[in-house]
Length: 217
Image (cartoon, rainbow, N blue to C red):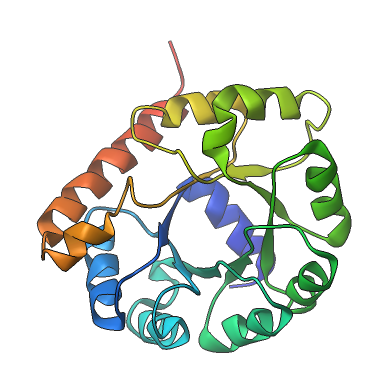
């Protein structure tokens, strides 16, 4: 899957589950539960124990059935390592020049984190294919809508503060996709073995995305 295909699929799916798993084993089970619920956009963060091995295992099991990426990329060396592990896209929580350059150099689809207008513009200048609006909870959909005024051609994926009951607001504000963390897949549920509940929550989020993007009469 090349970068163009990755970005097209991101837009088509519209939802990425951002996973900060408690362990390698539980993270794999979290992904299984999400996939069963229809969530196919998966971002394994570097804050997950043995994150690279988790991604390798997921790539081997699911291949292009899921859209697999690595997030919380915070130092340049992690970018190349993510590609080697099998990630199709990489995501940083912040905008920094050396990090951005290393991410773009991988040839993967790149999402660079930004919040202020200056950071948004700088992220695009560094080569971000999509700007990760983070933390989205600070300004909410209204803030994204305001940013879309002067920057209508910049693709945004808000992350942080995304819930099933506000997904429609994010898409109405102009998001091409949304990233959801603990609201979609709570770490506590994984520790408690509540994987059926994770599958149920995944179905709720998928339904919310579908409803938000369906044509209105």
